[in-house]
Length: 333
Image 1 (cartoon, helix red, strand yellow):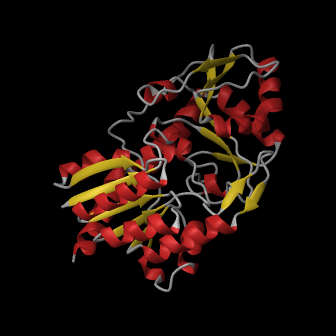
Image 2 (cartoon, rainbow, N blue to C red; image 1 turned 90 degrees about the horizontal axis):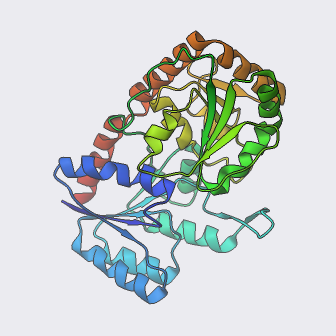
Image 3 (spheres, rainbow, N blue to C red; image 1 turned 30 degrees about the vertical axis):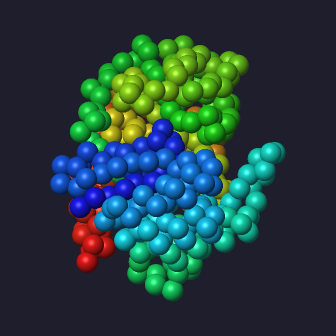
């Protein structure tokens, strides 16, 4: 079987998490895989869509195509899968305001109708896809998962002299650290041994916070996260983030880290409060939970161990690969 994956950008987080980490496993199962980015011009995209004819299955990820390109892709693909993990119908203006986009919604509905199967990450997004098709059983939920062979858990630390609170993310999400600015400032005043580590292409200096910056690298992300003692996942819930999943929490879990996260939909998917992590809704709760973890290595070890167990039990790539293989097999018939 030959499968072609059309992606936006190969270095985008959604491409790495939803497509690229699966490729070695698909190849091991005997599937010949090719991955291509959608080119930038209309003429080049029409040419790329013609390549679909040479494959048994085409997985088109996320990009909302014009009618001309979408129809060309459908005409050439023997079996077409649409994969998405965001509220694609929304857009942000220059001031960051979130708005509905009739053009995006129209293109979204078109590709959902054209596809033989639709794969997405959670029930919120799945319901939007079901509303856009007359065959809702074609919509399949596959939560974002992680390849635990890459993510060895870090050795539990009994360190009390130096504790690192860490965050890893993209520049577009860097502003979310503003949520915890005040609690981190207070913690750095209270605990001389606490530092904040930001792993990102850009940084967000915070006055009154002992912070270090490490530029993000896909090749070093595992080692970078393993330098954290505690991980944070602040996030504002709005119409833009409601459909997202927090892949950073999966990475934190896989590394065996205790996580403190905002009590929003994207984080509730993974965190069971007080069991494998903590969900918080106020600045006081942020400070309270982080204080408890800073001062109690045994608590860090317990929560981090349960986080890793959650990843192994519920969010391992080993559980997701057979679902995709079954889908590909069914679409070949």
